[in-house]
Image (cartoon, rainbow, N blue to C red; front, top):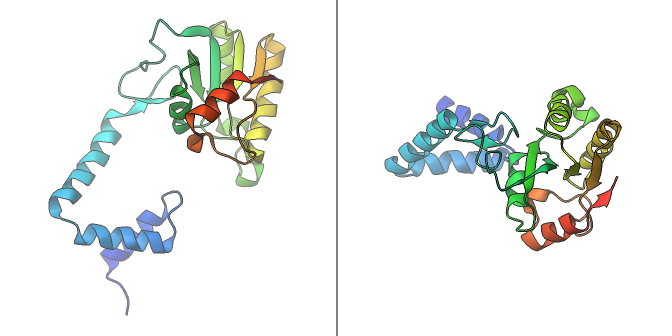
Length: 198
């Protein structure tokens, strides 16, 4: 028996979300259909409101309600230290580390030639301009410890070094192939403290 078209459309929509396969998309769809109306209304409202109220910071490209974001506008932060991350989720993970008080830059992903993602698909030009214009003294490259993150880190290092800026990479504590988003605070603290020159 074929599913009704509206359910099929909902399942296909959920399948487009990261890490959601066909079975999970089906479970989510049927859950929503059975859920109380007030829950569904709240879910729809929260998505609509987030889409309206959240935008990208013009300085660091983090997601924010105000521009510049609260991190970029914090006068107590170390202005010459810039941590480059792949995603806003990575920024959030590192921001929980108590001993890092610098600024951030969200690259927007990692280089992945097999997926068709090259330097022009990331904010490399914007990063170089920020380093030049803001007189950054050290750039900490905090991309993931997988092959895409390592490739991105090496590429960024080659682009930044001619600017006579110190380039470091997160140090020990992060497993190879691991995502920053899932690392705990202690691991990230050790990684920042033991960062190494590139």
